Figure 1 (cartoon, rainbow, N blue to C red):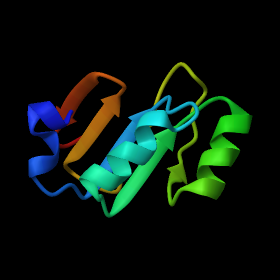
Figure 2: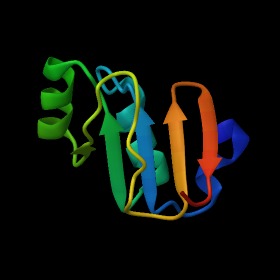
Figure 3: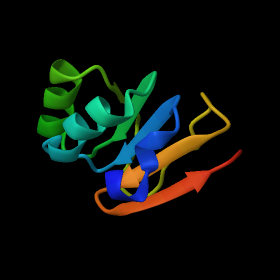
Figure 4: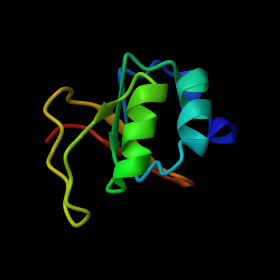
Length: 89
């Protein structure tokens, strides 16, 4: 993501879908320095670990659909190598 200059602009919110063990979460927190980091994780053991270890918010998900985050009009959403930018919902 750094090679795509993703971290060149300030980010208010980062939403990560399926962070698992947090391998990319930790690096993204350091590089992006978002005000808020929200995760969608269905594995209870990983979500509990990530909430305890990092300053992240666990968002509810059933593994099939995601509720639209209501906290920001502009959100960076990442999942490993894939990136999409949503402007308003």
